[in-house]
Length: 263
Image 1 (tube, rainbow, N blue to C red):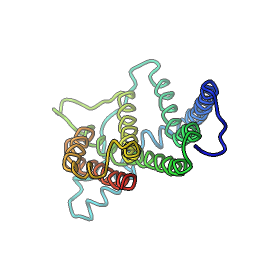
Image 2 (cartoon, rainbow, N blue to C red; image 1 turned 90 degrees about the horizontal axis):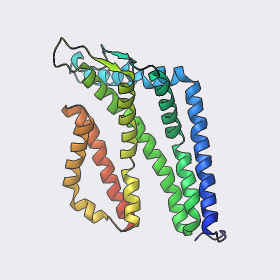
Image 3 (cartoon, rainbow, N blue to C red; image 1 turned 90 degrees about the vertical axis):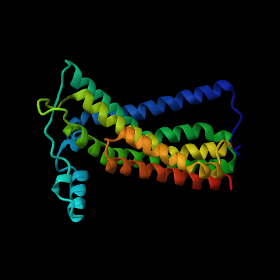
Image 4 (cartoon, one colour; image 1 turned 120 degrees about the horizontal axis):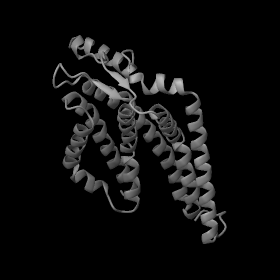
């Protein structure tokens, strides 16, 4: 264990855990309050930005397909749908929900840091150093996953699903809660998926997985990545590849991590 730690009783640990949970909750609430106050920026510039034709992902994608000579038909972002609210307290509840989600996302590094501070006294000095790097890597991977979900998954999925019609007689009109759930699910799920290397890091530490085992089953892993990509993206090859390749890249990165943990 780390050297300067005095012995604590079971109830001392419970008391420390209680204060760490309380501090974490306060930080999340403070960030959520800021997101609640700056409502216009959060909703107009972030939440509903993927519905606008000038969203960054659409502009760069259109520029890419034009440079490749594929034509304007593959450009994205020309939407023709309406988002409506059908519940009396719908907009207010969505406001609270998004504020809390922003609080959790922004405060994620602090939450991980509080968890590390709680468990670090029981670790050896080498494990403490490794854990510090793990916290930084976990936070970085989470934010990379959130950005990937926001700038890649959300716009491509939104473009496909909002323009899909079974008949010209059916107009696409989405409820506010449906749109919010759609965006938040893709973004948060992507953030969680990008924690795969960290999960492998801890599993390798426990001796549950090894680099050799992961190398032997890479074909199955590739298949699973493509199936997951097909489930969470629109049913077209381009979207599936854009999600499946980064997922498999995370798997390959995880192999390197497992090899480093257990050579």
